[in-house]
Amino acid sequence: MQRGSITVIVAALAVGLPSTTSSYAPSGVDALLFAAISAPSKISYTGACETVRIGNHASEASVYRIEHRAPDLTRRTYSAPQALAGDAVISKGDLSFSIDTRRRRVVETRNGALDDRIAVNDNYTLLLANYTAVPKPDETFISRRVAVVNLINKYTHEPTMLVRIDRETKIVLNKQEFAHNGSLISEARFEEVRFPSVIPAQDFELPKQFAIVRSPTLGEPTADTDRAVRSAGFAARVPQRLPEGFAPVEGDVIALKSVPTLHVLYSDGIRSVSLFENAKASTLDMTGLQTQGTSVSGRHAEYAEDRATALLAWSDANLHYALVGELGMDELRGMAAAIEK
Amino acid sequence: MIERHPTSEQLLEYLHRELPAPQDAAVHAHLAECASCAQAYEAEASLSDLLRAHARSQERELPHRVVMAIRSATDRPVPPPFWESFRNALRPMIAVPATAAIAAALYFGFSAWHSAADATTINAAEYVNNHAALTASSPFSEDPPVPAVLTSESGNATR
Image: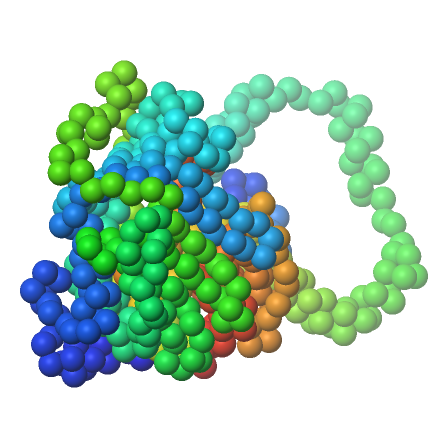
């Protein structure tokens, strides 16, 4: 599916998605999903959370306290893993401040994608286009009444995500993501949650005695992926065929170790995959990852997994490519082969 | 024109006409187009001239007896060995394919060395981190359980 198709879907949805999600009014279970996506911008909450991402070779988990003040101020204070105990991340809009207690510093990161409402809308449109939201009977979760919604992929008919949405506030209290064979890939859940009327501003203050280190800006993408491809500075090539339901949603030309690299993000609304491509002689350091050799259109390729994220890297005569995302090796190889043709 | 800049050793060999013909031609073409290499070449050439001039100024006459001994040795006719005559007879048959083989080896060796020497190493984690950054706009997306910025060796986002 190409970008134009997203526009068609938007038109087909009759209302057309506006530049901000607040005035969009879908109905039924779609409305519930939309309310859940929009809820953090309206509802403040505090709680304790657990998250886990499960890979074939390695997994990671964390436990943190969360304080969120609507619309966009959030503090996560980690108690596990041990290496992060006491560390915190405070985010406001597209800015994040990672409080590194061990190094006694705050790393400031800007991620343009966090504030990209157009991309959020496009992704939501793709979600509706590619997944059927199937409501299940309400449940009680951490003593609160929740709506349970299963998101079934329209092409594979497999459940890809399950969300438990607080009936009163529409905050997502539990989210599970599944692989195509039904195994759990990731889960995020509240262990307790409160909705205080006031969360004091000082909860979000940065420690004054820590040095602030500015980290390079991440993700200042354009929704015009064709423009990103054209501005790569080399004859970039993109897949002519994508996995079912996927479409390009964002593009960017970034500098990795001063190497101009095209980055295009493809998504089906839940799952996503990034294409990285550069023309300069470069080698990929996959230290720490379990790699396995494979092939792409007869060329040698390396496949690796980083927790639940897969990576496929290969080169042709002129370009170096890497596909990174939540797809299996076969899907990544299929996408890679579509670049060659 | 060759794709990369010649090394200082190659420039020196070019200066002293010690490069094989294909490589010599490649460096020659490169110097015509690359101002920085032409400047480096000129610098090498000036240095060589300077050294030569200095050597000349320090030059001392060899003793007459030594000069005579060298002359008599070099003037004496030496009959060429049998294999030399044989090789001379075969020269066109050997020289043509040998030159082609050397040219090919130089070209491919040059390219391979060029790629390896200029390659920039990109850590796979940089791809994963940048992918994670852009997926922030996905519905129900969330930060990875363990923020990379707090766990990386440098403590900085890797980019």
